Image (tube, rainbow, N blue to C red; front, side):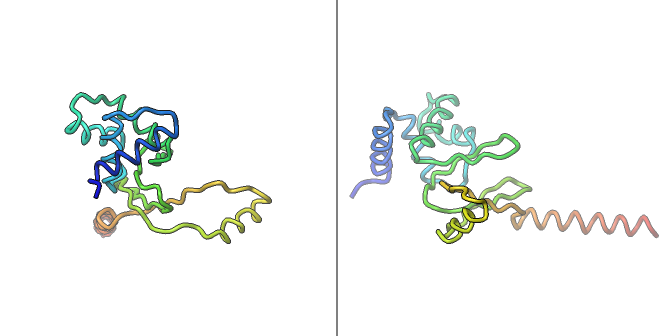
Length: 163
């Protein structure tokens, strides 16, 4: 039976070859890390983790490796209006829930049924859906608790001020 690194390396080799790219140890280290985490890391976070395995890797190489993985279909780049980008090694159909407080991203299983996509096409007068990304935004349990505590504290201050 193949070891996890060997299996990841073979998947990577095939995807890179199919896209005219070379297999490198740096790309393999980035892919192994991304495939093994569910934290949706930034390029900086990938760099900090991967350099323990490949000490000579540069941040620029991590960025290029991540973009190569995205281009080969082995990762997804999650971008936001604030210019930040995170990477997801999961390529199966799923959604994301992003905390507006701490920016943590959690995977949510599921996908839209074909009927839903047909409804969208009808509603948009023939817009042909070729893909989609669904993201739920809100607050994780810890941030929601913190917000509630701040709100309760603020309401108490307001009450005191009116006395």
